[in-house]
Amino acid sequence: MMKKYGKRFLAAALAGAMALACTACGGSGTSGISGSAGTAEGSKKIGVIQFTTVPSLDNCYKGFLKGLQDEGFVKDKNLTIDFQNAQAETATADTQAQTMANKKYDLLGAIATPAAMSAYSAAKSNDIPVVFTAVSDPVSAKLVKSLDHPGSVATGSCDQLPLEAQVKMIRAFLPKAKKIGVLYTTSEPNSVSTLERLKKIAPKYNFEVVGQGVTNDSEVASGAQVLVAKGVDCFNNFTDNNVVNNMKSELQAANKAGIPVFGSEEEQVRGGCLGSVSIDYTALGEETGKIAGKILKGEAKPQDTKVYTTQTGTPIYNTDVLTKLKLTVPAAYKDAAKTTTTKSA
Image 1 (cartoon, rainbow, N blue to C red):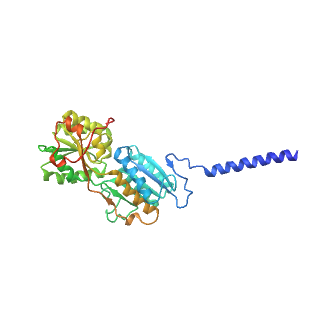
Image 2 (image 1 turned 120 degrees about the vertical axis):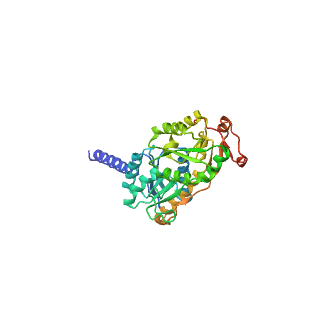
Image 3 (image 1 turned 180 degrees about the vertical axis):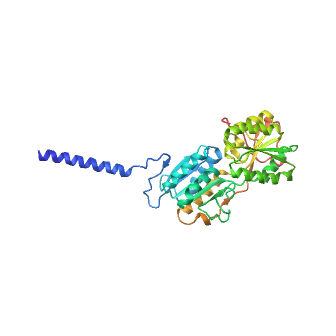
């Protein structure tokens, strides 16, 4: 009898040991987390919030991962990433950021201005570094004190649009145009400040800028119709998340009126805009990832790290839209990159 009970005890002990081992190896169970549970030497855990799903922001995240890898941090090896998409909802971004801050991640990444504002608000009291990208005006968004000397827990990269080059393109394609229409979201500081910049540049090229503010996605279609009624000769997009996320509504109004839409980057041109002097968002994200990697290694502090800024762009135009509007390519852009409208657009 003693021998029989001894075998049972041994089996139970082995089962208990295996259960404990499985528990120790298990993940956190948090949705969106990928990585090695932070057990490798020098490993880090970060959170990344992307405000919405548009190609330019997707490209930023792709580049961000490449930049981190350049600095020695590889996802699923020595880097755990809790990636979240706020689906263009500021309240969702706020909640995601607060959850990440409460978990005391080593760093928060933020893609687009609203996501950056949410991350900064949640992280500043916990002294967690925030590294942002695709933010046109970090100063007006109150993320940093200045581009050269952030002076806060946040730094990153700025996609300040090459507006003068864009206006030159519009003038070249539309030599008789007088009014540029702009849809912008009133709650996005980057859009408001970019509109003011455009208004200062446009008169040099004999343009009047007609702005139409919107507050949510449902107003994009009606806002576009208002601009058409005001007699604009074209639309010009910024990197306004709300407008770009609902660009199809804008394009419908523009196409019906027979006027072009100029995008702020090449993915919008592929989506049906006529042309753009485009920023490379993958490259922008890569520079941002490098900044994040240096901060994670302790080689830099956000408050002392200059915001990386790109102000140059590459011209690109859509041959499908060009033909549809019966326009010709200006001599200055005969060597520009070409694309066609994607089938999903």
